Length: 312
Image (cartoon, rainbow, N blue to C red; front, top):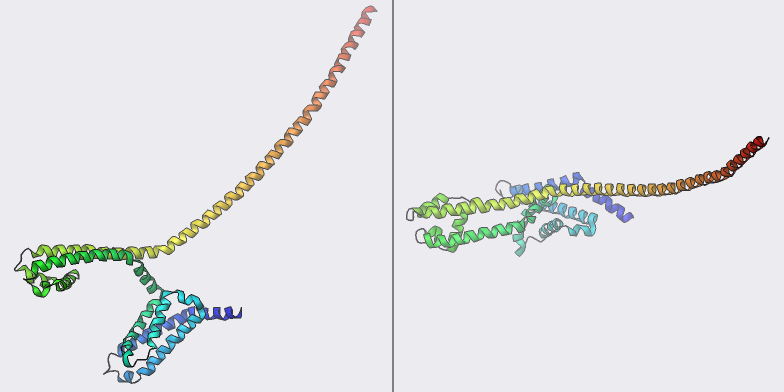
């Protein structure tokens, strides 16, 4: 119990809002320092004290991860974002000398830890990853369009404008610039003088790729984001409906029990009424049988009295 108590206390400390704000502030400060480091001439003091500043940031990140591991236990390693933090901080622990000096550039990835720390950013990135299956199909369609247009462009304009359509690779790069609508007038002007029909190729490609296929990619991303936004609400509605359904079923069961009790009482009451009615009918019939002899005796007595009067 004591083990769970201190772990719960540590978990509340790690999940506290002020601690999360502190982590975000340190990550932002590290990003500012990395940006100032690019101005070596203006910030000479930063270059001189770089090892000390880097050690402070690295110590904080290692301590923060250690506290999170102790607070979460095995559950910590079930989250993909926690693994991302471990990899980024772990690479920073590699000595920055010899062949590993290039890994010094990986320190910039610490800024991406904002995604794992801030729930809103993590929510958006998760939605983007969930949209990958749909995006894969649309991107494959875009590649087919670009590859087909590249072969056609190289065959049509390879000799006219070799700097843009000299070979397949150059043509693909040119079509990518057309896809981004970058310098497309210069590209079209380089061939349209010798090939007046070239406007059909450029207009068709730009409409299909930039206006249709790219909008499909945006539509897939927006649809996935809407699903992610509505997912918690849908789950909440399902819980409410399930609770209401359980309440209705419980009420129906109670009503069924009450109906069963009332039916039993009515059946018992019906038997009692039948017994009482039978009990009341029998005495009436018996009294009728008893009165009939008394009526006959009265008639006989009256007849005898009449005969006596007549004889007298």
